[in-house]
Image (cartoon, rainbow, N blue to C red; front, side, top):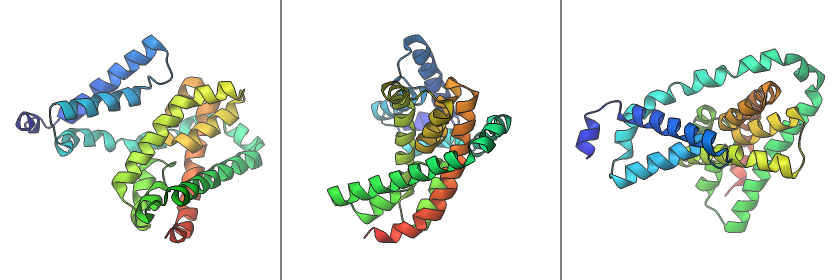
Length: 231
């Protein structure tokens, strides 16, 4: 089976696009939060790779072309931020305070898990960049002695979890302010969370885009300072 897949250089690309398309169709039909297209696509792809015993490297030969689009796609998120720039100026202090608090909360939680479950240092530092976009997280984890594979997995799981649970959290806690919704999605779920913000509105998307940038910068500045604390 692997031999057949190897012969098709675009197998991973086609499978990824098809799985995501099915995820979108399922989400539109069911309207359920946990039917997030990325989550559905991930489950389908992992299931097929296991079922047919296909090596990940074979799948990634084609899927890697989608990875190349990650950075330009992230840059495109600056457009809604530009459109809603006045909101940023009017609420600058509140926005920055919220994002700093979000970063600190993330690091404190990881530190708490490390102490509670006696996690290995390498695992701990690999989790520190979990709430920033993959492009930044991979480079950062290499500098602090983490494992990029663990970091990528943590980033994806964190983003999917944030996108799936955000609507429920907003409903339970009665969070209706679009600025607060956008900042929460961007700071906790990076680009995947922002994909959910796109469904909520222009302001949510702009604030989520801003959160990706600021959270990424703060994480890059803080993580190298706190990483040596994990022993």
